[in-house]
Image (cartoon, rainbow, N blue to C red; front, top):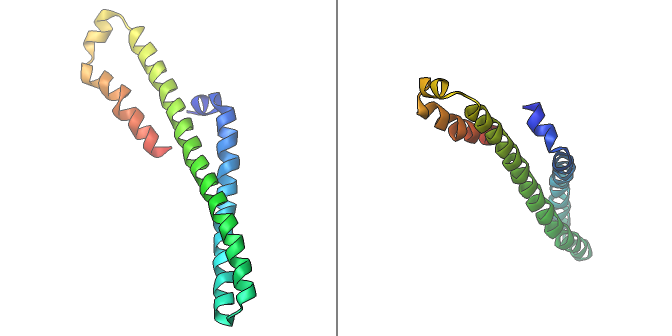
Length: 123
């Protein structure tokens, strides 16, 4: 599995970086909500404006990074699945006709579809 993951090292680097940014931004959401609650309880209108300005800038940026994170994750998993399918297909095609016929064809189909889909879920 390491082979397939590290074949896509640039996407993997971007996935890790963007996921770290999204995790940090998720923590900062709690700080923004804390500040909003403090301002609301103290009835501080100038503080409220500040929190709203920060929120108006932060949440669209967070949304963009979250979307980017999801898109990169999907792209990475898709490329890994394609490479695994190629290797499985090459392995099947290298078999002789007698070796191929000795195994139930459902096993080949399972290897190409169900097993790869299971890996997608795990990744």
